[in-house]
Image (cartoon, rainbow, N blue to C red; front, side, top):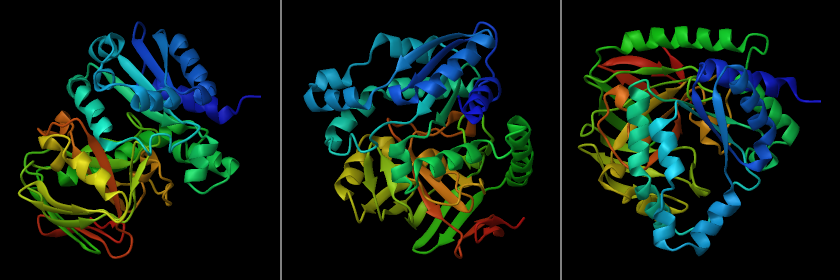
Length: 367
């Protein structure tokens, strides 16, 4: 018997997160192991009157591409991928694989080749999203591999995932609408503010948000969700930051990251683990050393680190920044082939000051 939570999650994704309408062309991505949720999403898209197509993903074939492919093959962008980003109305990505470390030994140079080749598609996606032409959402399907990364049993991880996505199982849409209302209150307070300063252990970072827009994330693009974010002024970041959680990218776990910013740019970077991967990724392109995003995590249902950024960047009491490409709807002008989120816990003495006023302390809003 199918898990009723899975069916409700599929309904939430299709009819709330991306709001599929009659005639919408919809691409659904997922690995074989995520088939139960992919099928439930497919059915809901049909019932909403959309035109769904399933685009299978395989970490095994991706690993083969990096292992055996030439640079030309790694950089090749298939026409169907261009069509989806340029012509489709929506994209639903289901996360979940059998081995989260499948790409951990891939040389970072090859990752950079691939990221640069897809930079134009990322730019297209962000522009169409900002213009309201393209809807997308990323959501998890709990697997044993993800449960192991989170140091949970599969049963406990399933409970964690569904509870994070649907804290009110009887009315998940109503719950996320209430989150949006509360976050809109925060955004209203932030409107028109000029500067931010984040203070924490080994962290003192200043940013300008003058003229930038803060956005509430309440289930429209990520599920689970819970954050408010903006795109800092590109040349404004000054100071230093230590990220209390590892940053995960393509199977590489980079731990103990320390960054120093001057006039917006990362001028010093180090890591206690996988430093070489960090440094090579920072050299992907010019925009990779500048911030595309600053955000505060607000999901109180997510309290522990899981090694899945979809959850970790939403941890209530945390903030994160993303190196690389910014979202145009915030006013960000930073462009890059990467968008790499890095998370820091503020629950033990951390502070965020806005225009000289304490806004956030010990993981809670104080405004």
